[in-house]
Length: 340
Image (cartoon, rainbow, N blue to C red; front, side, top):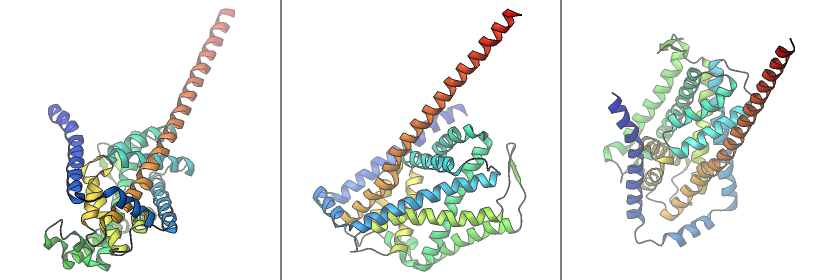
């Protein structure tokens, strides 16, 4: 078992890097023979200023919704003593780092535990918090993706050059849409029927109450629509298939990037999205994807690093102050002992 675990520790990071290399090779083939630099500059210049503003606003919506994920999970745990400001900072830092590092569940759990442990949460509570946040994201994908596929069942035809035709047929889109919404309905039904509390390895996991589920069904679509909106607002009008199709393609591309375990989904996300936009100019789509990576990934990563440095600096200062305080008390106690 130890041998298998050690090999798995190397396998998943290796798989991520292989996915990045393969994706870059495929992207190179896609753009081979094109003057990419001048085309990209022209594509960025062609984005109207108000579209940049809308893309930035969509980024804010996405990260506010992600902070709402944590708040919902804390409500489920019955934790109400943590301020919204701390929750927002912890959530922002978690997602900014995990989105860029890869293995988001593992890296997100580590960052959250470091933050929330200072507020008294146990490892088991943080594990449940991470599970609720992950579940909220999946609910958003199912809900938004389901509605998008029912409204635009031909959205999967964007993937005609990427997957077998059977999987991109309109009837397949309707089946997937109904199945996704059916899964959401089943989840809601669990709250209506008040499913019992489960126990895993000594950890009690209670089924979310209806109030929690309603909040999840608000936060998750807001985050996905915000993130997809960044790309939609930056896409050129030529070949733009419309917002609902962009949302469906975004969900597929983002899911593929997460599944690849590539750091930040680098290359994988771009490849799937480009292949899903055959009618749009490649330079324009790539410019929109680079703007998404800048606003949703890279700028938040820089801010998150500053937040982590400030947090660790405060923790170190408090530890030093506590040490000096304890040393002073011990010194006073020794002096009193000698006087007696």
